[in-house]
Image (cartoon, rainbow, N blue to C red; front, side, top):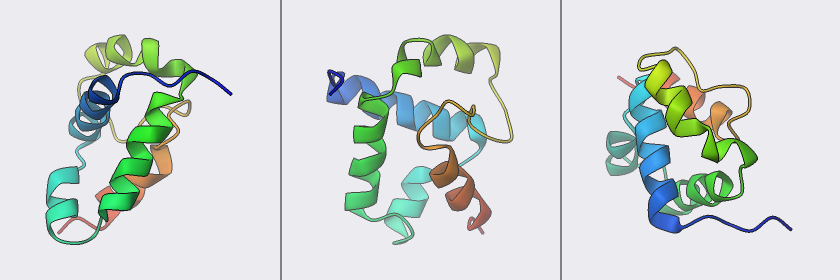
Length: 86
């Protein structure tokens, strides 16, 4: 089992990836489209991601993108949340 990264580091990464992909994750949570459990699972998935070390550089090099990189364990969740934004 991989060692999980620090919770706050990965919370920030999830929020930054949401911003980079144009996904309003905070509004999704507030509006009930993203449960507390689902948000926590996104952070947990990020914590175990081998790409996470390279993620900040990827986001810096790709400030605005349509979707998260294929290596992102939350790629599908970001896309689904973005598709349901009003």
